[in-house]
Image (tube, rainbow, N blue to C red):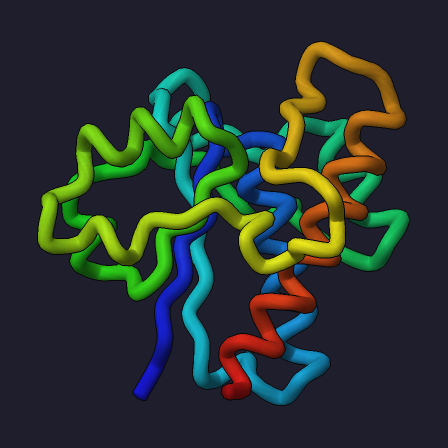
Length: 155
C-alpha cells in the first residue's frame, strides 16, 4: 500500500518544497521511493504555479536536492483525505490548515518537527525575509525531520 505525505507552509516556495525534495531523496536512499508519494502545498495562494524561491533551490542543490521541477500549489480540503500525513512547518500554518481540515481527518495533521524531537525546535522558521543562514537552518531541520519520518515509515 502506498503511503502519501503532504508538506505545507505558507506560500509553498521555501520550506515545504524543501521538505518535499529532501524527503524524496531520503526515501530513495532508504529504498522506499516506490512506497511513498510526496507532495507539498501552501496555505496561501500567493505563488501558485511558481517554482521554489531561488535561494531555497540554491541551498538545496548544494546539498544534492534538486527542487527545480516543483511548482507551488495551494492546500485544499481534499488533501486531507488524499494524504495519510499532512505535515506543517509552523503553528500558524497548522492553525490555518486545521480550519480547512474535516474533523474526521484531523489525526493526519501534524507538525513536521514532531519527527525530530532531538532538534530542540517545534517549528521550521520561515527564511523568506532573512539571510542565507535561514535557508541552511531550514535544511538542517528538514533533514533531521525527514530522517525521523523515514524511521517511522519503516516501522
